[in-house]
Image (tube, rainbow, N blue to C red):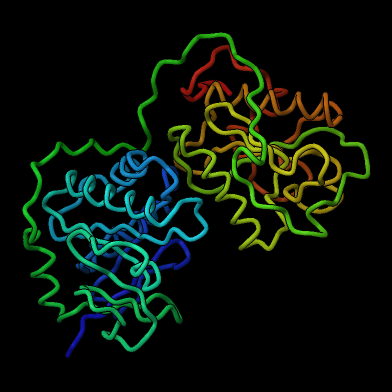
Amino acid sequence: MAYAKGYDVSDFQSGIPGDAGFVFIKATEGAHTEQTGYRAKLAEARRRKLVVGHYHFLHAENAVADEVDHFCRVVGHVPQGELLVLDFEPYGQNVSDAHATQVKNQWLAAVKRRYPDNRVGLYVDRDYWFRTDDNAGDFLWIADYVTPGGPRIRAPWKFHQYTDRPMDIDVYHGTMQELRQWAGAAAGKPAPAPQPHPQPTPHPQPTPPLQHPWQGLQLVSRAEWGARPWREPNGSIPYHEPRKGVKIHYLGTPYTFGPHSSCAAYVRRIQAGHMDFDGWSDIGYSFVVCEHGVVFEGRGLKRRNSANGNVPLNEAHYAVCALVGASGSTTPTWDQLNGLRDAIEYCQKHGPAGPEIKGHRDGYATACPGPVLYAWVRKGAPRPSGSGTTPNPEP
């Protein structure tokens, strides 16, 4: 049988191969993250008249409504004939298979209500296919690294990812003509009553700042946010010299402000990236401050951070990271600046740390913590005049 060939791409791939007939493009992950190259790849795919799919990587520990809203806000209007997919691989997430399955089904149903004229399906590997139920929405995209078109499952499938070398390569169960006809047709299942599409906006619209007295330090311990144990021996190296002060960081990746219910999961994701991809012994930061002003303990006061650039720089200053993006949500909120100030003062009082407040770029070649936060640092990191989750107009 002749199968149509395609690929799935994320920010790990620079472009779409020339022999692609279809492509799935990663748009979002969790309740905050948008792929930097999503829009450029989407424009390329549409220019080349490929069959296009948009996919979202699920964090099943988050509130499903937050994940749905984030995905729909980023993809915006989707023409009929383009596909929407949930990437269901909850490895390492602190949820049961039953809970993950429930969230998966809620996401598929909610996105279908938002996009009744598009097919909404499921990507899953063979392992998790046997650990979940048989609901794949409008279609199944199965990952099993065997002969193209021969995944080792009995369920009907539309797409098969058969290898990840040199990149993720897929086939459709039919020809390109059949794929275009299937993708462009109305979904086989009766569509729910149409729901109004949200107006696409780059960020949530800010609400007026809440003018209330700042409540003070809200510190979340490692145990409370679900940190993994650090690795020995490097994970427990103590500070040997007095700290001169604090250095402020930002994420340096796309980030979109969201509900506080997803912040702890995002901190866990940062830790996983530092440990599993960077090879560090723990999350690199001393503390992390979310857009709601809550301070998450990273390596804390006693264990040397690994985020400032090298051992002398790490030894000299604590590292405090704000959940602020290089794109998306780039301006810290009122509450976030208060939380950053809380973290600085906590380090100064209990570290103890000296009076220096600097940016990551001070002494190390980097754009971190970005122009907005760095301007605030250069002013002495003052507390804002208001509070709330509206981005501070004058950081």
